[in-house]
Length: 503
Image (cartoon, rainbow, N blue to C red):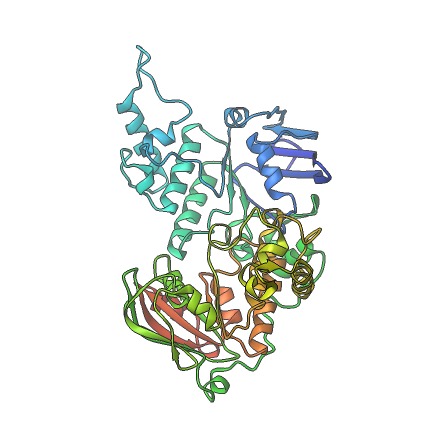
């Protein structure tokens, strides 16, 4: 391939600085027509900064961008879209109360000669675009009523309406079911056949090798490598990402087998549990030193089960026992007193207090233990917080740093530290590694292993199959609010699990 001929997009020696931080340091990146080029790296590597420059959200400080071989000036989202670059961010930029067609043509409604909006033409054109990517939904449907997967397709349809030549996808599968991911990949292959280049930003390395043609690794704002996926492997990509070899993503040092754990009474027993929010006759148990993984497709009831056990959702029927003592329905405070901790799926909205410091977030559930006559002992708060920051290797410039400025993996470790300041019997982890990079995932998996080794009962809700098979001693599968399968880890396959998940 010559220097310009086969490339639709070229980035040359891009530099971007923020106060005190060089987010991009001489980065090079190129994209061929009809290519899926994966862009990977740990949180803070520079991926988001690079795609925001391409989107016109940030202006580059140095370097050059070539589009179809010609120098391009991108100073605003309008410039980016006019060139033919469409960025589909993880937080979709759609207007829920508007129709699909209105969103697809949001920037440029087709007009009649009298300058009135040509609604008929707009709806017909939207239908044609949607059918070209295999999505037969009405152009008159309100976007707010669509699934996340369908909304992503609307964003892609918007790109096609502008005759985009480059589509950038930012973590597009983070909230999708396996079937929806398969549909997305089919659409991406259709875009490739149209000659559209795709920049694919993801933390999921298995997807990189399934859908991408090349993979570029950034680390600390610098280009580390660009390789065809057929000439590299997961271990090599991980090493490039983190600067070291990760011997295993799923360390397993605790005994935690079902045979070993079954010799003791269970820490958690759930008996015929039903709630208004989804659950129907759910029964399960978790023993000390055991990691039980719970898998299910979108809407299966994993998160509802976690919230019911913790007391956030009321129970209609059945009961929950902790070491033989019954939990009070709908009472999180009672659950905490009984030794249960919960890491929610949405850490930013349901877990962290983003404007508070690292130290304050860690000690949030232990304020009473740190107070005397109603006054918090700040020295003790600092000492205990520092203890857990060191134990969990939380990367923060200080204990006073606002937690909102930490990476996703470090935020998750702050939440773990918060609960482990308590005397726990059971920890429930709902999607513990969603949205965090491979290095942080390995650290979270190591912590899970250590917690089980120390005798804690661990319940992990996850939609990631490698994680499920990697961390669990025993696997439960849910579908439509019920448990539809139970498997020892050593005696199951992905096919077995998926078959139970679609019952």
